[in-house]
Amino acid sequence: MLRIITLNLNGIRSAWNKGVLPWLAAQSAEVICLQEIKAQDSDLTDEMKGPDGLNAYYHLAEKKGYSGVGLWCRRKPDVVRAGLGDAQFDAEGRYLRADFGSLSVISLYLPSGSSSPERQAAKFRFMDIFYPHLLELANSGRDIVVCGDWNIAHQEIDLKNWKGNRKNSGFLPEERAWVSRVLTEGGWKDVYRQLHPESTDESYTWWSNRGQAWAKNVGWRIDYQLASPALAGTARSASVYKARRFSDHAPLLVDYDYAL
Image 1 (cartoon, rainbow, N blue to C red):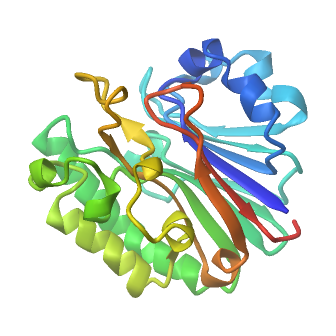
Image 2 (cartoon, rainbow, N blue to C red; image 1 turned 90 degrees about the vertical axis):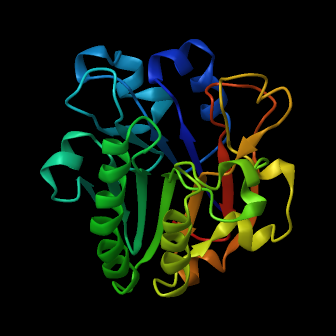
């Protein structure tokens, strides 16, 4: 079995203080994909750089307290690649890939556009850059899973208050259509939705800190594992862990019947 977990930490130091390391270490995951590290190398402790026998890799943002992605791998990867070759987004630390034989696992933090029109424009530019890369990956012949915070709820069943968010970043028609293209033209499979095709409040992975979103489960499903078809076909279970909170996001766990 190959267990892969993805989690937006909303700050590795904050999540660390909430006990994320012992929980993750106990899950027997082969690969853990992390987003929104919000730290620079000098901020990381020795334990963060080598957590509990795992091989840790990071692509951190140049800006302090911002973005950044990571991969924790039980087995040492053959190759680790950081960035997409775009100066702006690579400086923000949004993409990290590890290869194990014919398998590639990618930790992705797609930009949010909610803070300003300028950031929404940057989000659209990232999507324009990332789409052909996704096509290239899909045609590579490798088994690939792209895990992370995509900052887009794809369908109405992917968020509680869809009617009130139709004009908001994360649920804009253009964003949703882009995800549809990734899944149809790109051939990628949304593993959680493949295993759980019906609407369910258990699918949400993010809750706003405003109001009582968590208490009322007014959530969004914006964290995904999108896999190549052959790999997706081996997925046996997918679940969102909500018994404890380490972040404003919840961990998404997927078990694949796949030998690493």
